Figure 1 (cartoon, rainbow, N blue to C red):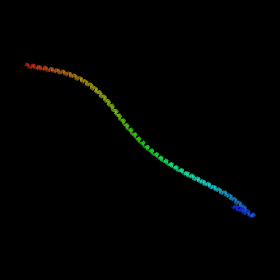
Figure 2 (cartoon, rainbow, N blue to C red; figure 1 turned 180 degrees about the horizontal axis):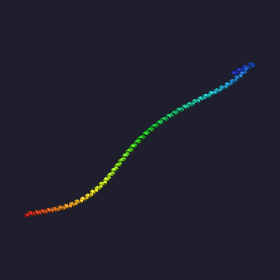
Figure 3 (cartoon, rainbow, N blue to C red; figure 1 turned 135 degrees about the horizontal axis):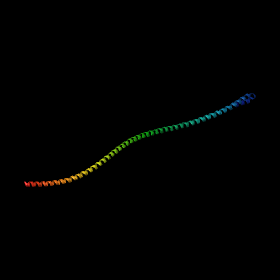
Figure 4 (cartoon, one colour; figure 1 turned 45 degrees about the vertical axis):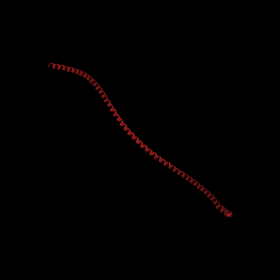
Length: 182
C-alpha cells in the first residue's frame, strides 16, 4: 500500500516526484521482500506447528508405549515373583524328598542289618539243628542198643525168675523133706 501511495504521489508531482518514484520502487522492493519474508515466516510457523503436532503425537505415543512397557514390566515382575515362589516350593519339596530318601536309606540299612542278623541266626540254628539231628541219631542208636540190652536183660530176668521159681520149689521140697524127717 505504501508503495502504491508513493507511486501515485510521484506521478502527480511529475518531474519533481522522480525521487518519490525511486522511493516507491524501493518501498515496493522492500514490500516484496517483506511479503516473501512473511510467507517464509508463515511457512516456518506452519512447519513448527506441524512439528509440534508431530512431537505431541510422538510424545503421546511414547507415553502410551511407556505405560504399556510399564505394564509389561510389572507383569514380568509378578511372573518372576510367582516363578520364585514356585522355585522356593520346589526346593522345599526336593529338600523334604531328600530327607525322606535319606531316612528310607537309613531304614533300609537297618533292615539289611536285621536280615543279616536273621541270616546269621538261621545259619547258627541250621548248624545247631544239624548238631541236634546228629545227637538225636546218636541217641536213637543208643536207644536201640539199650532196647536190645533191655530185651537181653528181660530174657535173662525171665530165666533168673524161672530159676528162682525152681529154686523156691526145690527149697520148699527140701524144707518139707527136712520137716518130715525130723
